[in-house]
Structure formats: C-alpha cells, structure tokens
Amino acid sequence: MNKKYYLQALLLMLFCAPLQSWAKKTKMLYRDHVYEDRIKGVKIFPKTNDPIGMMIAPVIPIGSGIQLVLEFDDINEDYEEYRAKIIHCNYDWKPSNLVNMDYLDQYNEFNVTEYEFSENTRVEYVKYQFPIPRLKETGNYLVAVYRDADPEDLIITSRFVVYRNVAAINSEVRRSDLVMNRDINQQINFGINYGSYTVSNAFTDIKVVLRQNQRWDNAIFNLEPTNVRNDLGQIEYNFFNGENNFIAGNEFRYTDLRSVSYTGRNVARIRRETDMNYAMLNVDQNRMGQPYVSFEDQNGQFFLENVGLEQGLSGADYVQATFRLEAENIASGDIYLIGAFSNWELQPKLKMKKNPNSGLYECTTLLKQGFYNYQYVILGGGLQWWELEGSFWDTENDYDIIVYYRGPTDRADQVIGYKTFNSLQQ
Image (cartoon, rainbow, N blue to C red; front, side):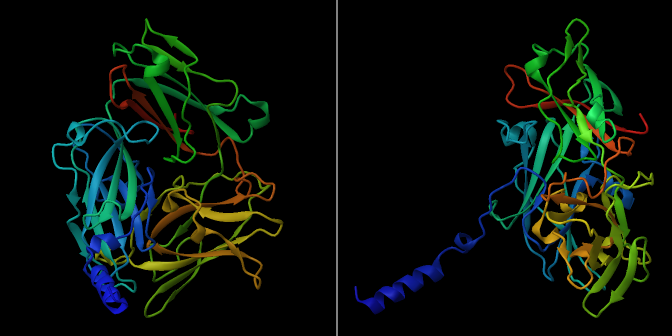
C-alpha cells in the first residue's frame, strides 16, 4: 500500500468511526458530584412549591407517595438529551448485589424530558427536572445523569435514601465526654429498639451512620454497639473515647443573592452588565479566637429563589459572586469555600487566592439567585481545618441517624430506621 493511499484510508476510518467512540469517558463516583462545570444549581429534594423545601434532606419513607425530584441547570442555549439511571448501594455507598428488577418496576434508563429555557436572563441556560421513579426496596440510592445514551458520559451523581421505619431510635446531643474536646465537640449518644424484628447478630446485622447537617463527607460509620439486649430488642451506642463526636463548628456565614436589583444581606454591591450580573460580598472576618455568637442559619444548606420576578426559577439569573476574606495572620495553608452548594467538596475553583492589592483572600464563582450558607476551611499551615471559623459545643446543628440491616442471606443493606433531630431542639 503506498503512503498516499494509506493516509486516505486512515482518514476515512477516523471520520466514519461511530460518534460514541469520541464521547467523554468518566469514572463514576458514588457520591454527590458534578462532572462538568457548566452544570449548575444541582438539587435533589422532596418536591414542594416552597423554595425553602429545597433544603430538606432527600430521605423518604418507602411507599409514602413523597416525590423526590432532581433539578439542575445546563449553562447552554440549546436542549440536550440527558438520561438517568438509579443504582442501589449498600450502607458504605458501594453498589449492592441487587439487580434492577429487584428495586424498579421498569427499565433502568429514564429520559430526562422535563425542561424549560431561561427567560429574560443575562446568562442563558436550560433548567431540567427529573422525578425519581417509585422504588420497591429501601436503601441507599445513587441517581446518575448522563448525556445521550452513554452512561460513561456523566454529568451528575446525587445520593438519596429510602427507609422503612421498623426500628425506633432515641438520641441525645451533649457536650463531649473528652475533657480536651468539651468546648469544641458535640457527642451523639443513641439507642435502637428493633422490637420483634428478627436480628440474628446485632454486631454484624445492624449498621448505623451518623450525619451532621446532611453531610456524607464527615459522617461517622462503623460504630459497634456498646450494649445489646436481645431479649428486649435493644441496642445501645454510648462511647467514652470520642467515637461518636463531631466537631461542632460555628454558625454558618450567609449571603442573600435572591435579587439582582438590590443588595441583600452580606452583599456590598450589585453591578448589572448586558451579559452578566456581578455581586461583591462584604468582607468576611477571620473568626479564629473570636467568642461564639448565636444567630439563625440554614446549617450549610442553600435554596434557589428570585425575588421580584414572576417567571419562577426559569427567570432566576446567574451572578458572578466574589467572596472576600480578611485573614492577615495566616502564614501558609490553602483556604477553600465550602457548603452544600459545593457538595462539601474542596473544589479547585473555590480555592481562595490572595489579592496583592487589597491583601484579601478572594474567590469569584457563578451562582444562581438564591440564599447560600458557606464557611471557609483551611488545609495546612499547622492549623485545624475548622480554625478560621472556630468551634463551639453549643453551636446549633442538625443531625440524623440511619439504621441499616442485612441478614445472613440478604444480598443488600436495607434501611430499617431513620431519625432527624436538632442539637437545640431534642
């Protein structure tokens, strides 16, 4: 074969190759994650007409009729064909051995058909909505959204939980029993009453997860019972070495970006250009060494809402929001902006950078109109990650406990108990 003919044949094969072979291949992460930067405003929550309902944890009782919905925006002028599938997971968020027909009544590939285009916004986008289908089994679930028919071209993975209330849970939030941590930690003592439910071995059949403010990133796994009463169907979890302790943290900072016409709380100024909205937030202060001050927050959550417009969320615009932090005594270490809006991930785009002119740490990120809680964390520099915010045992936090059961012959972990409670309202 001469060289010219070989090159022509090679080019022909390349251009005639199936388009799917060029598609992006992405490793699935079994956690809340956004795989493309143009995908924004991701939320999974029980469907409600109240924007504040977006902050409710995506944890529902089986057969309750409560509709979970996944919403997200694609910063794009055109509609794209997205599909979704549901994956059953064990308590540690590894895929279970259940097959699709065990937990679904239909084929496990769903077209995302509910969408609407943004209206009269500086930033054009398409808003998508995917109602989670009815599920036949309890457990941890991951919904994966991908482009076209290629499950490896992922854009979103989001977690949710379906439970059956078989086990009753009693709980107590208190100051840590560890003397060295009494001022900064909260301790969760709890017990489970599974009644007449058949449990062969509570040490192996029952697993629990403790969460603070709906977070999976700092959840407590692998707690073993401290006392089991098989005759009464009771399990106790009371520890003395800090196994059930959380860093209490501090009340969350917040910014009100619900309006692009006037400045909301913690917003210094708004600037509207023909193609973008800009918000400069007030300068935040380093709270290291400062006394505790109680105020109402949303425990790290966010909700989306536009104030003063009638188009609903499709009329909500996007804002380039600049966060600013004064932290003069930080010699080294990387500072990140985190909250539910970041999936509690330390994202490179949310790393604070020092402005040589102002001396402030700054980060600009694109956010949809709404109300946001956030905090600053620091890595390195000889500091604990929470020291820019401070930690106080009397901080108000939400907690929940998820109880899993797996018998000797079962193929997956089921959720047999769930309780949510507040550190100040027990």
